[in-house]
Image 1 (cartoon, rainbow, N blue to C red):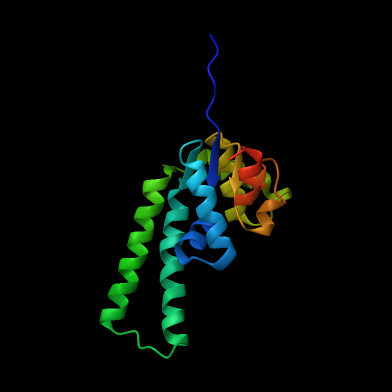
Image 2 (cartoon, rainbow, N blue to C red; image 1 turned 45 degrees about the horizontal axis):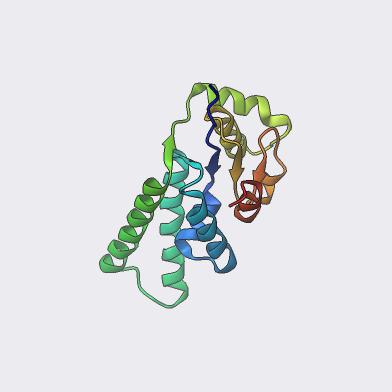
Length: 162
């Protein structure tokens, strides 16, 4: 008796940030992909990615407040923190969190010849470890990385027929 394997993707920080910040076309593309992928694919995210989303959202939102002439008082800081935490909840509710451990770290070191950035190599190593078919990303540097296929959300929709 044969069983069909469900397809799996590891979604990186750039896609989650585009979704949470609604970054024009990228935010819309991320939303369309995730909406189509939820019933059809196993969606993975690393705990490190969630931490990065939280930190980067806080940084970007603080920057926006300052750029618009606002003041980062206690009330605004609390609001920014609340938005970041709500975004973490969206990611956790959408994806399965996968751990990164010593095996992934060692594999990332082996990938240094094809991926100079350690964080990108660790993400690719983690994708291999959780048996993801690909990494979904907007990052050009990752899109050239082997051995795991890295695609944009729109490309992932085409690859998986979503």
